[in-house]
Image (cartoon, rainbow over all chains, first blue to last red; front, side):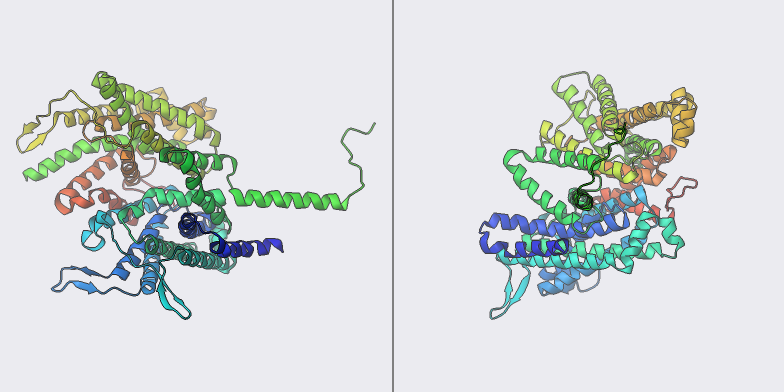
Length: 350
Length: 290
């Protein structure tokens, strides 16, 4: 029972946080951590549940960010015809939706393409894809402004009873929005994983040939998972871009993918709570380390943590903790069942 | 036409170093089944060693190159010994994650030691280019090509004509049978990683005087090395050699005739195209990868 309630208690706690937490900086850190947790959850769907290590995940994040930013700012595109294609600024939520759809579309494309191969090939194709996206963002200056970045992106808005539609300039509101989105993402993944699709994905992670032999259309399920995962990563990218209100080609950097991967494997890949735990840890670790260490040293620690986790906690934190508690419970039950039986040690009888 | 010849010359020169990088990576993958994410950092390490030895300590340029390669080999052996040996038998994703962690730590270490400011490696070559008809080539670039070709030849002789090479190829084909024939697998793995790392380090040291040395110079190079290796087929050594030259040609001509801004994207577009048509790589015969 408590295990069921725990996530909701956590959400309640986080939702009430702005009431007493007046430190704007901590709210800022929590909001951006929340956005990355959503991205990490989407990566977990691929890495944890299908077993495919996508190292180009940041591409979907960036595509969501750029699409949403461009749609909300409006753009004109010289496509070679007589008149350039002009798009007026769209409402932010429409842009947000556009970001999700565009990311999902690319997820479908990459899924169709990359799942022709597995393992190392798959990893390298996904990295290449992210790299191409970065080059496009850098070089298609007419559209993306290249390294000059897209500025003054409008923040997301929300309808408040009695006050009409308000742009979310206040940190507390944006924080709550990200929290709500995070909960939504969590529930979507939970539903998915417990569904037929989720069981198919886990089956093919465990043994692809066997899954195929019982009639699971492996490629189709992988593509479905990639589309959902990409759409969610796109949503987190859009949340990010409307929050910091600027986007440049560095959003496609490999290091962001690595951050997501670290969050997932540290927390526990293939568990629902894993990305949240890992995300909170790695969202706050830089803030804690900032006081004591230079950025370079921080990255060395990141790298070292990654190695240490793989060596000593290959399943991640969540499964380890679950196991610990399950073990305790079992021991407690055993103790309760046989309270007075003396322990018989081997070889003690004479 | 003169433009064409100049591009061709540039491509061949660049291709030599690309081939060195590709061979190192594909050798490690082929024999050890490890996707080496520290490859780019070993390349950077080689460049920094050349900078330190030649630029800071005033050592002879050629001696610095040789030492940089040896230090790269030593570092590679250390990585293998400390990180990969304990993980023997682990799946490919696990070693990949460890290598990514090591790569991040190495890059941050380079940043910490040498700072973010670009360095240049001094070299004894004159800057006036040789002019052969329509083509002009800097002497240092010719030297780089010569060294790359010599190293490629040495590497092939090592692999095909020596006992060590036979042992390595045997481990590549079947580690268990090789072990039964008295090949020390562990030693082969360490040597493989060391040789692959040494090739990456010398590539970095060679290109250091041509480009500038920065802590992040390895990022793009590592990705290009992956592209080369995919082009040739993972673990395929002749494939990687040709792949290196193919990538250089595509980049050079793509940048020359299509768009210079997308120069670094050419390789990735190329591998996406290759995977569409021939997922097993351009030169691989048959391999199950699905």
